[in-house]
Amino acid sequence: MSSAWLLPEHIADVLPHEARRIEELRRILLDAARAGGYELVIPPLLEHLESLLSGTGEALDLETFKLVDQLSGRSLGLRADTTPQVARIDAHLLNRQGVTRLCYCGPVLRTRPSGLHGSREPLQFGAELYGHGGLEADLEVQELAVDCLRRAGLDGLVMDLADARVLEGLLALAPVEAARLPVIQRALAAKDVGLLAETTAGLPPALRDGLLALPTLYGGDEVLVQARERLPQQPMIGAALDDLQWLAGHLRSGHPELRVGFDLADLAGYAYYSGSRFALYAPGGRDALARGGRYDDVGAVFGRRRPAVGFSLDLKAVVEHVQFDGRHAAIRAPWGEDAGLRAAVRSLREQGEVVVCMLPGHGQEADEFECDRELVAVNGLWVVRAC
Image (tube, rainbow, N blue to C red; front, side, top):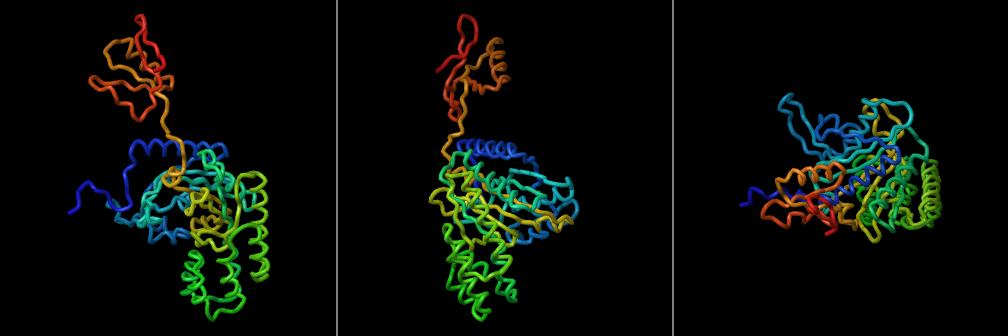
């Protein structure tokens, strides 16, 4: 018999020590986005199901919690990703001409965790740039993702670049049965060469050889050279490789400390993307801390297909890699009825100071704050002095 206060699997409370670090990280990331001209939006956690699962959102169907609205009887969904919502805001509510930069930060809910130790309630931060189809937008978003993680104190970052058009170009060579496509995508994502060979049996040689080459096209600049030699001379594939080379050159020039590589078989979220894509890793990390790329079709279902590129990350996952403690300097003060004491406490708080009052009989209430000063009475005046 389970205890009533036990939480569902892969759902957890965030206690003060971790919460303050997550909040510190949230502020760092939002400040980084604002510095780049990104405006904050706060979409609702709950929406009509047909809105959440339209267009590119269809890929989220199995990950979305569903319920019935007691007011209207309509089916509702708890968002599993915020990007479709931001696309709706750009298309319907803002409907601006030209470039729009938006960012967000809030919880999403998923029916299944992303990994063995993953959460079903990530705290998702992201940034989206709408209205520009050139590589300048891709580069801006990639550099913003790097800047966000560097501001959080992460060094030695590794970025893997890929492009959805490589696979799209290969599949354009010959018809492939609809039933094979998900298996091919799954085999490529897992770099399962055995499954890939079995699934592609009987396909035209150029297509099959190209698909079997993708899992091996992982590493440094030699990957692009090998890709041009081993993949078919198809315009879409050539354009993708050219764009990846351009992006890598600019990333290395602007961020010499960033290790840039390529993974042409990276298909995480393949249904979402229409162009270049990237994943950012901590040194030696196996799971990506941030993912993003170009998804020009994301607003089509809302009646406004226009260029779009962005990235997102889970603060709960990223905070495990940061070193800061998140505690802020504070002033310890006694509790008392003295009017001068109470006025001094109010004045300090109005100036932005954290003042923790020790209630009667309790001398250690400030464990979550770094009380480096205290409020004491000196010659009838309340003054702050170092502890």
